[in-house]
Image (spheres, helix red, strand yellow):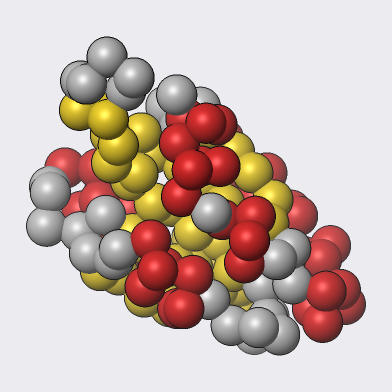
Length: 129
């Protein structure tokens, strides 16, 4: 599994700046690399809406939330989006997900989502909190 130059740059941009909070990557069979599908500053609803209903994606999302004590926190999430209609691509994306975990060693919250409700804001906050 490899990363395109654009995907490396997008992930670095996410890490170093506050201009974006989300990078969505797709696996390209032809190149065998992860390519940028979307790079932006998305709300939770926009993130869910940006994910295709029939194709997997890898998502790195900086979740912003308040702790029960009122402190503001940001926690990076690595999400494997694997909708039921994309089962034939699961092996390739699982390998890409493992590569992303290694590449993003500082990301401690990893999850697989097969339905949009699994990306509910409160659920993500509970995982990150």
